[in-house]
Image 1 (tube, helix red, strand yellow):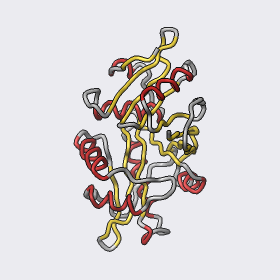
Image 2: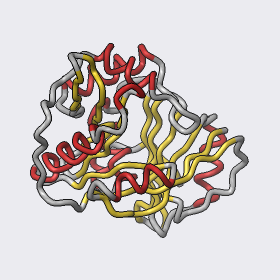
Image 3: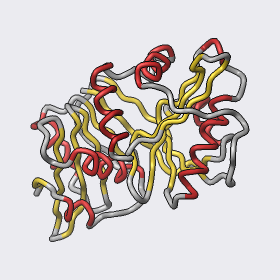
Length: 248
């Protein structure tokens, strides 16, 4: 049975898993009082077996071994999901148009302090950098949605951004796209094409991951390509699990 979830229900499965972090961070950032977000839980034999969150039409799942996957797939179809992301250990039998799969990696590196100057860029410049780094597996979000979300989460201390300049120009960035007291997920790891092969992304990723680790948080990143996975492994990360993102 799938029902609406509140904070107490979500906390029953509290952990530093990255898929749980996606769900809980969204709740802690927005709660259940907005039309564009939603939160549900699945109960199986009296136990919470899965958590589901929605941001616009993008769904995230935190599944346990007790999850009823057939019911979950039917629920996503009924809700008109545009996409869903989950641990690839669990398979969903649901028609889709496109699939992205890859690795979730966890930072296991040593404490690291970068020598490069790190600063906080303005949201517009950050978005322009992200837009310049689009690819087949990385599509920049809508600007107004990005601006609203980053501003809102920053005001709640749920978004940490680090960036580096070259000659006064924003050259590279990394930010947390999800944060809880137990874990953080990195995203928007971008270096402008004009400033690549200087080690800027590696410096920013290692520095921010180290700082978050010192605050007692597990640090994760999702990688959808072998090149990116090797980059993160060379930056102190180890593979935690696989992930799948389906687009309907």
